[in-house]
Image: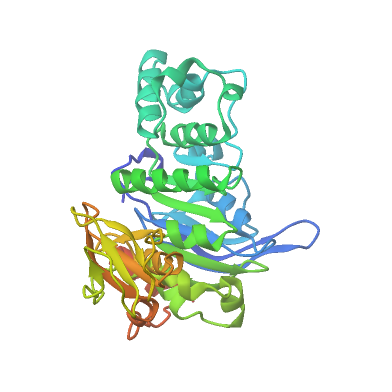
Length: 383
């Protein structure tokens, strides 16, 4: 097994907690006998209420905090056997406010770690410029300073800086929580796009369950005191909470969230109410134009102008959650399914959409089995 300190991005890292406890000097137990295996090349999200030990757990991986007892290993190497500065240079770290150096330009902020690792300044800056483009920022921003960027742009720079040393492991502590919802969604989507290219081992902390189920390959719900409530894939977590605490934390709308994990390709769509001309009818009908695209709703018995449509969903590409949203926003209560060109394929009622979940209730699994489900390998982590 190659030592962690010489790793590169192609060498994925498994992070293992074995009976880890963190007790602070005042007697507070932030993490209590935590055993957890974080699979390589995937996103594992730690989520839970305030005081559950999420950030403490994260920071013990790069030794910003050392455990009181137990062992944390990265591909079998105890992190306590690695010099903290050396360890941190090989682990990307993204925090809530980006943490950029205000007196340095954007390009020099990103180039900081490669320069510390021995690259000459010219090579480090060239790599930084490539990373800025990769996270969706124009190279024209390179000579600006942090205060000249918006909050969302600063967070992108923070992600670029964390990637600058090409670390196999990235730790992210509520990286998108300091920006508005629109910017946050854009950052989340960009982050997922990057991960499909890079396949880093990522541990991300959030307090937002919607963000957890959107970003995580695995989600670990922690209870106060740093104990595992449930460690599972997002779909299984939403389908079968392990106990009352997890169910309450997930909230009343977990069923709607679960629709995000079911594709819309299997819906039985109604085409009988899709028409090309107006006229009286006892049922709601969708009027389409000459190209087959939706132009308005014809209400039962109405002979006036068509009512405006709400939103559509793309069949086979969008999830059942998008289909349900379409149904709720259309006056007829029907979702409008379209193809990639925007042409109407058919209509689906709300009962059809929610009924597509029947028979899809996966059983919850242990922490180890959850890791195996994602990584394809057996795990020895305790429940």
